[in-house]
Image (cartoon, rainbow, N blue to C red; front, side, top):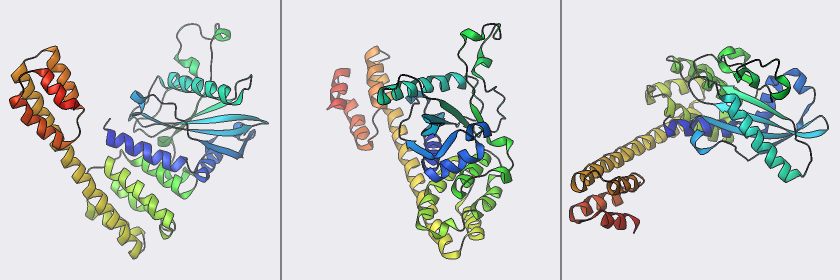
Length: 328
């Protein structure tokens, strides 16, 4: 998955559900009733910890909430799956993260017993989620007979594809984000935007609402290539007041231009890197030392350094000369 797209998913998810009002309203509407009966959402605390490994951050985002369950501190672990297809191994990921949470909790609280963790999964891919919620569903063999020897838990699934737009509840900002998540992969996404943005009309009158628009616009432009600035202007003018619409369009144009500049810069970097790799291979051959220096070249992000390195290749007589040049 493109890092730009991954970062847009992560940024919008984190900004939305690190807000206590959004988190509380979401949990009030979507936790099972039996869980809500024993969870005190007034005690909800946002934790800053993340438990996802670096190599999986392209596919998941997470939030951890501390909350009283009965009279005992516990946790709600919220995992956002932003792949475009269901992950059959998500149980294993959740178990690994829950173990990390337990270890951290034991270390910080000095309690002798483990806290209860309620795992919650949000999925918004175009394919319906058909993976069973129980961990034991992953196991082969006579699971029923061997149940005494098998750890088991069930995650709470929130598959956006199973809900109509009217059934999506919560604060205005959370509803808007979930509707955008739900429809972002659809071909007619642009046609859905006026209805979604109309929810933000009151919010746009507040300064905090305008700040939130920046995150939304970045997310949309990062994930939908075929929405033009003109289309976006039409959508905004239909749903917001004229002065606020002008402000948001100025912001949208600024973000679009920044995106173009970033794209051009990345394209220039990529072209220089590929040219340098080719030149190094031609001059020094396909050796292990050559592969080492190419790996170092790929990590360079400064265009001026790449241009200087391109010139250095002509005069360098050995690979160590190039490595010294890069490291200096």
